[in-house]
Length: 388
Ligand SMILES: *Cc1c(COP(=O)(O)O)cnc(C)c1O
Image 1: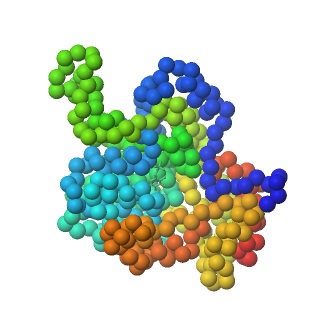
Image 2: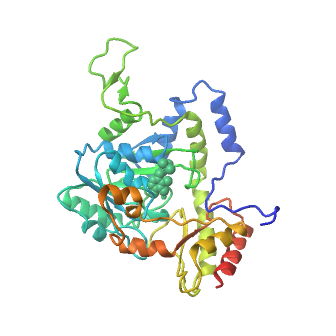
Image 3: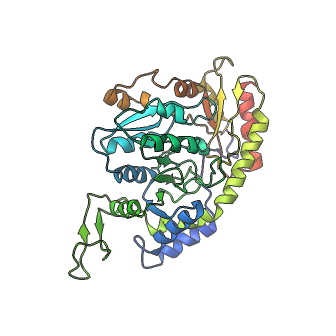
């Protein structure tokens, strides 16, 4: 890579002067944390997705952990998530002393389905945690119907999917199909707060408990106190955490949310350009978008038959990096991680579709700040390195 050619990572934030000014303004204000920007950000997120309530957290993982915690599932029961996800989707169950169980994915959407989840349900199943992989919503109508039939609550891991829509055209996170939806605002996600996350819900009781758990399980709200001897008084009502987000982060998040639709439009343009460039090539498969879905693509995932092309993936990744192109392999099936094998006895072969997907997957750079020139560079380099 020449010194003048900037490295193109697989994902990146887009922070402008207006974002910076908003953060600086908070730095000059009275509250750096636990101030007014947090409620403002939560209201904006809830309004954007069409949910009644939102609680923002220090990251998406903490948000997932608390979403599971408020369901009060006794130790030893099970939750079902996708084999094709980041480890946090499953770890949140383990933090709550539940056994993470993995459903396999559909070979086209790479998402779990009502059928794949159903095959893992048993008498111990107490929560379903579908993941909207790469930004594309799962078939939530079918999953919600299954959950309703079985009487099991649903938490959506929408860390990839803020800005996306379900097949019925409504926004991911409105909780029409679930008790709670979880978002992440890590810099590679659609909008960022540096680190950050949120849970949306339409249930006021869950909302209040999520708020308690975020801050040590303590409250000063007169409506919630068992006694109220004076203005200094607070009560710890649960064993909570310090999972708070700061006003600095929420000021950034508010600016980012304002730009989400524009970011999404740009992501879709880049996806369309990639699809055009890579469609119909031998041994390369472009992502499938299920009909009617309107996805805020988080990842651009190619399925490449490296063996048929006579290439190995590690060398492809290395060659692309030498040309200044960052790629990622997302995801290593979670049940094949050493901790999951050791702790629960999972093994290779437990989720064959996710494992076959993993062998062929490669994520190309996708983020709204990419110029057309950068997209062209990625296409040219990828075609050259893949010899297609
Ligand atoms: C990013 C991500 C998380 C975790 O979010 P953090 O904000 O990084 O803690 C959880 N699940 C999925 C699917 C993610 O991509």
